[in-house]
Structure formats: structure tokens, C-alpha cells
Length: 194
Image (cartoon, rainbow, N blue to C red):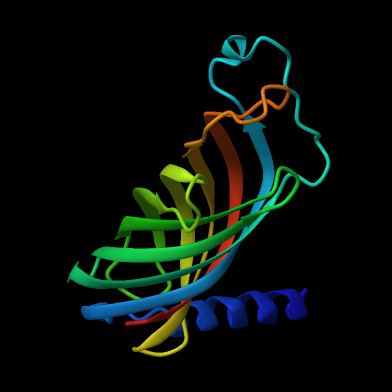
């Protein structure tokens, strides 16, 4: 019983000493990190327009992403960022390059706070006819501060991308999709410089 009490007291004291309530988030901020876009659901809006049923395999529908953000802390709890990403969707494969505006709200001005994040933007198309569209994402996470200037943001969220295609139907026997929706669950980690 004494050992259990000692361990509980030790954990409590570590928790007290690890919390610093001085604001460390101010000025410019930079973030970079990978995302896993798991359990991706691929669908077509208005499938009745295509005249035949289009189905997507449930196997291999996931994505990988790398995001880079630069922004500014308006207060120790609120930041606005401009972000650029490179996304690769497997299964029904596609490469997208989102350009987004992101807002982050931290529950506490001190270190190791929980936060909520929202981003909205467009996709830059690198080919003539592929992946123009829009994207939005919502996330909840926790900051893990290493120092007053660096840390990690670990988060879970929801990602939605709609791609629009521009094409000429040169092959009438092949169906060309006009729009494609991708809904994904996000698991991400960003390295942050405050």
C-alpha cells in the first residue's frame, strides 16, 4: 500500500512540475509533419449521371500526406497559418497538392495544451486535367512542448477533398469522372517551432 501511495505522489508531483503556465506561443510559427489519411471513403456525387454503376474497391483506400505551415500567433491561444501539402491517395490513386488557411485554438496559454484546428483551401493542379478542387479538415489534438520554442502537435481529425476533372471524352467506352470525393480519418504529428 505504501508503494502505491508513493507512486501516486510521484506522478502527481511530476504533473505539477511539468505544467508551466507562462505563455510560450507568440509571434511567428512554423510546422511540418506527416499525416496518415486512413479509412478513406471514395465516392462520386450524383452517380446516376454516369449511366452505369461505378464502384471502388475497399482495399487500399488510404492516403499519405506531408504538410508545411507558416503562421502567426495572434494571441498565446490563437494562431493563423498558411499551409501547403503533398498528398498521395492509394487505391484509386491520385496526387493532390492542397494550399490551405488553418486556424488553431489552444485551450490554455501554457504548455502542453489541448487544441482544436480547422483548415480550408484549394488544391493546386500539377497536370492539365487532374485534381482541381477544394479541401477542408477538422482536428483535435494535444501539444507536447519540448522547450519554449519547440514541440510536437499530435492530433486526430477528419479530412474531406473534392477533386474536379477537366477532360475531353476521346474514348466513349471509358467513363471519365467529373468529380470525386475523398473522406478520410486523419492521424498526424507536426513538429512545431514557436
